[in-house]
Amino acid sequence: MPSSIPLLHSVSAIAYGFRYRAPLKHTCLFYTHQLYTLQPPNFPLFSSSFCRVPNPNFFTGNSLFSRMEHFLSGSGINRNKGMIEQLQRYGVIKSKKVTEIMETVDRGLFVPEGTPAYIDSPMSIGYNATISAPHMHAMCLELLEDSLQPGMHALDVGSGTGYLTACFALMVGPQGRAVGVEHIPELVAWSTKNVERSAAAPLLKEGSLSLHVGDGRKGWPEHAPYDAIHVGAAAADVPQDLIDQLKPGGRMVIPVGTFFQDLKVIDKNLDGSLSVRSETSVRYVPLTSREAQLKGT
Image (cartoon, rainbow, N blue to C red; front, side):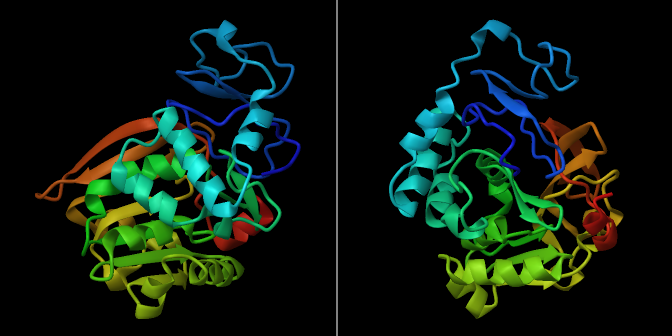
């Protein structure tokens, strides 16, 4: 995420989780106990279509960011744990299993060197791609938890740095299968090195975790059907290949939309029908071709 974007607080309760592409600049993330919003600086409150803050007088002082940095000082392991405790404190993480997995997989191993890994913010990883903010990872893990039980199969589309794929692999275990698909070869190579340094390294070596170069819109048929599918970029429409590769009884979490996006939770019923609901409004990079992504279109 560009350094010109000031983050005034680690996000608490997630009613609006925004993940946005690197070219969005000069954006402030404001916080309340109920909702948060993205606004260009100096815009009047409520002028942005993203603004849904019920009480504009609730905004707190600008010392919160420095307090968060101070709170997360220390070793990488301690800072990762501090990040998780902060998300728990504000009700983002409720699941004991998700807590355990996020404590085990150190986020600091999956971000560009020199970036503030433990601040609750998305950040650029190059190639017009981002790694989601920790609160979005936590949200998706909790939404998919029942479909990430030991022995199940999980697909991570747009696997990026490999962080969420590693989390999936630890949740489904050696008897399961976690597959990451990313269409930027350099990111796949980097994510493999990241996983090799993490707690998920044995699963990568044994083969129950795999990272592939490919068009994630087409899924990864080799290990389908999947109990859990996570898509880390926004689709204009849900790709049919992903619906086809979702197992009856399984769940997909996918951002859908262009400028206005919703995080959709799609459950495939045992009869093959779909139940769809919107979890929250989000802002993700677009799910597109490699060429279009590199051009930033």
